[in-house]
Length: 102
Image (cartoon, rainbow, N blue to C red; front, top):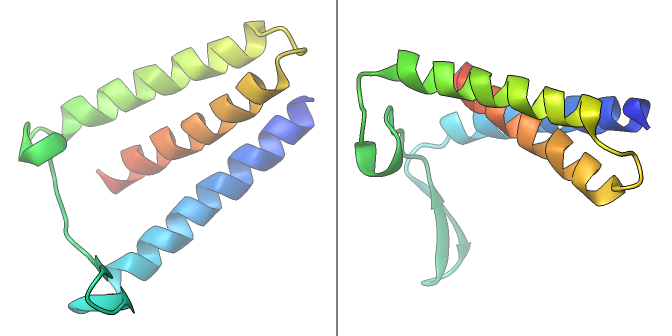
């Protein structure tokens, strides 16, 4: 079960890195559906609406604390809750991916 967790975590983490690398290469917008849906790269150094901009150390610290809590949950989780087990692997990958972005 831990091997599946590790695989999902590593796969999701690298997929996060690859998609963010691709997104940073976008110049302007990419139209997916005309007059309805377009992808535009915008960078935000803070939290929602730019709150806390310039305090990246705080967001890294919170992210790392959350990652430790998630690992603790995995180690103490009853293995019969497979969907929760898998969900935590995705949360951990996203959390550490966001810490890398800061």
